Image (cartoon, rainbow, N blue to C red; front, top):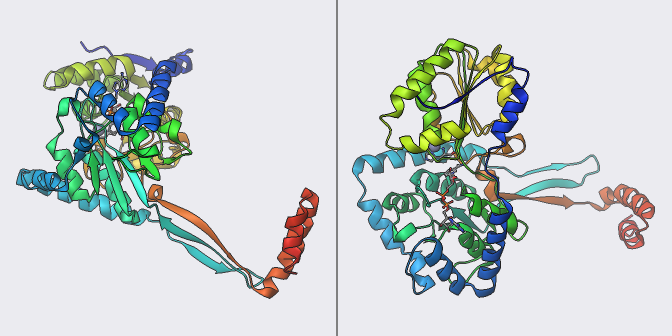
Length: 431
Ligand SMILES: NC(=O)c1ccc[n+]([C@@H]2O[C@H](COP(=O)([O-])OP(=O)(O)OC[C@H]3O[C@@H](n4cnc5c(N)ncnc54)[C@H](O)[C@@H]3O)[C@@H](O)[C@H]2O)c1
Ligand SMILES: N[C@H](CO)Cc1c[nH]c[nH+]1
Ligand SMILES: [Zn+2]
């Protein structure tokens, strides 16, 4: 029997038990932060030389120069051409859907005239150059290439630089093919904190970018946190998570596999089912036992389900939503008859999958919305990766001589109160 914890919201210590489960989310420990700080300082000081040494050490490569990190455009084209036609077609369809969804996210500027005749507005411009981190340590995901690069292209970013580790020199050719499809400009086979450092500070081979996006392991996320300010970063997207809310009327085999779909990402993934039906929780537990055996990644699934999995019995669906809000999961499936009725009760989730026929896996590949989502409860305050992450806003102010006069009086008065004489005079010069 698989080991999975059972929780019941009626138990007096339920809150404490849930907190203990959520606390298992991996965070960058002091050791990781120390290691990352040393890597960042080394790449900043020594550039390519450090990049080569660190990549040889952490990715078991035998590079003699940083030039070997770059994957030529022709190699990406060859990877695309060599792809099985069915997979090429699936990637193209996924890319089309991701692009179409992204187009809706594009921020638009605005301008209006205030009551004094002054023009006020906001100009939206794409970032010049961005770095996308595609994880490649334990598994490399072509879908993550599409999810990172397509919104950047839709935003109008001039240059997209992709980094992806190639442990032992091995790089999934489908990742390269996806980079070709998404129109990535430059690809470098470097990962971890050293890749983030190179993108933030620039080296002789890798250009410095304006923003670094994409998920990664503890070293990658600690490095992104550390370089924030020098460059922009997106939300921190770590190990995958799924919460399913069920009324007990779904096929338990489907729900078991939905939980496994995120558990199979890694031993640190989180998979939680909340249901109002105790019998259904039993049936899902049985289905998990049956379906686990067929999975090639059964070992990983078993560990993540044991460490970060749970079957939670709730009094009703309202309470199930409240528990889910406390978890603020990356992905939330509403496997109920009327998911729209629950929607207003959900306040924190990276992506919500409505109804029994919408598995989270559609979102990972081809539904359209981005699969790079806030994890570790960051859905309380941050957003899915989207076109808006690759755009910035600039305020516009244009006064007429008449419109300037009243503003001069207001600004002058407040500047006096702040004791800033030059501000007051500059404003009153326009009165
Ligand atoms: N939320 C999302 O959208 C999403 C999508 C895909 C993957 N993920 C997550 O991203 C993560 C990917 O992790 P990964 O490890 O497979 O790949 P990764 O590319 O993030 O990390 C691999 C790199 O880590 C560095 N590294 C490994 N051990 C190190 C050490 N001891 N010291 C210093 N550096 C070290 C190496 O440089 C290596 O190249 C997983 O947690 C996965 O769940 C999240
Ligand atoms: N579920 C992951 C994000 O949490 C993304 C992914 C890529 N491939 C499959 N799934
Ligand atoms: Zn996934």
